[in-house]
Length: 226
Image (spheres, helix red, strand yellow):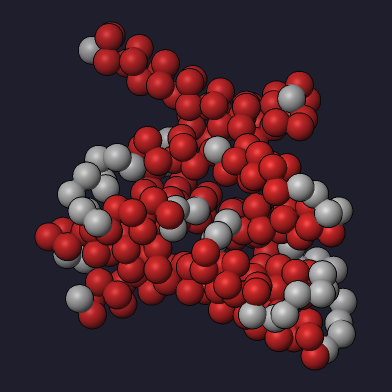
């Protein structure tokens, strides 16, 4: 088990360097709404959705209704349904652990699960749980630190949100090193640009859906020709 945890920690280091500063930025912004500091890490434990938590700060500041918050969060996080479909095989034999793996699925965790391997193939599910739990710990730690700093120290947080962009770039490079196949990346780029131009408000959902459709179509065509 120690080997699995050690391997998961090494694999998750890039996520740690992204999640901690991003969590701190969220904690500072959330604490500025006037809530007690511990609500920020509590939200990281019970909600654990980085982009949705940042969105919640704006919605709460605008005094949005609970229904508006729920619908906005559902739309933003609907991309995880696409991620989840591709993990059904990996999560098949996880039992009750599956509930936490589903709850803890994030973009970065998905990237690590699909691009790294467990040191022990007999305990692969434990490796997935370790990756998921470590990533959530990084996020909750960042939320707590940010909220505490925001309650006691004033400083400029401009530019901190770029850590998320940098993190995505690192994870994309990891995927490229594993696949060495340009087609999925070119499809994602083309679909992202097209969705941004034509469906700006739903850009993420449309681009993901279109990318998956094109990749599935190519895979089906390849099987037919074989």
